[in-house]
Length: 177
Ligand SMILES: CC(C)(COP(=O)(O)OP(=O)(O)OC[C@H]1O[C@@H](n2cnc3c(N)ncnc32)[C@H](O)[C@@H]1OP(=O)(O)O)[C@@H](O)C(=O)NCCC(=O)NCCS
Image (cartoon, rainbow, N blue to C red):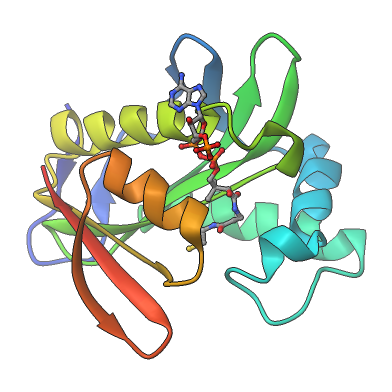
């Protein structure tokens, strides 16, 4: 069983990275072999503009990001999974939870454009919601996204998130687990 440490913004979790499988996707630990997949998403304007000001310009940035995601897991501050589409055997993006407190975490995600509109992220998100409830014993997940990011807002609403509030150009969503 994986459980929260009390009063710390970290989780007590097995050292083994939690792989999760569903019909079409495998959620697994990122490795440096995924650097091109990460680089491509983080330098695609339709993707990076939703969470960063500037695109990645060097492959080293993708390597550093992978290292920082994995170090976050080792420090029990969050989990970032690579999303593999099983039939194509490729990494198409990531989905993350970052600890806020012992009851809540924030979720984030990115998906290669060619795979939009197929329910791939929805499938991954459903699994991460289930994992957060059953294994991490979390009480809620939060997500903030630009209000203009229709795909992200639909993804959240279709998977049970409700709009909490809007501030500036961002919408803040929450799901009680
Ligand atoms: C946000 C993002 C992950 C959404 O991707 P997506 O493919 O639209 O999301 P879903 O996996 O929920 O797919 C939903 C679509 O798949 C369709 N679909 C097909 N088969 C489906 C299935 N089995 N289950 C669910 N939906 C299915 C739905 O009808 C819907 O299509 P539509 O967009 O034409 O209405 C993607 O747009 C992205 O990576 N954006 C850039 C990064 C980003 O914005 N991150 C968030 C920053 S806060």
